[in-house]
Image (cartoon, rainbow, N blue to C red; front, side):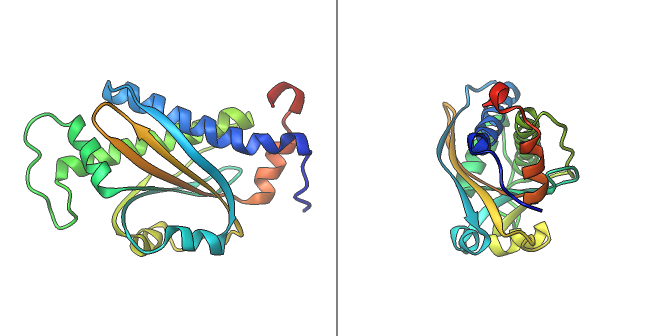
Length: 203
């Protein structure tokens, strides 16, 4: 299948990522009662080999999902562990309890998993709104450890050539959370959805 699209629709790819990120910040604000804002440093469309270098080998908090409807593929959220811990603590009143071997208390892990649920569903809702469709996904998977472990937990590197990479920062009055979102779509499915959009009405 040809991957050509109307050049006027190229802005849709940026709009998809922006809208997904805005939905994340809005949902975090509603969930936590904190005024969350998101600043997107850059949106890149990278080859999978460059993505592997971009992720590197470091400790992180990973939250991954699989899209079960078009445009299919996988989405991986990578967060800084210290920022994630601070955000979790800001949402839990009272004693955190001791850390387990993963570096997070059970309450902190529960809070981060809930944050992950909100972030992933909000991000995909933002995509669906721009693409004028519905996109179902699997239950988010939470992992704390090396990026290699996170990729393994996701099911290994997806068989995709190109990846959306969104570097951003979520800011609240308590913490700044570095967030990178890696989206591994099936390009032919994504292009087909973009082709169906009325460019004059949506861009």
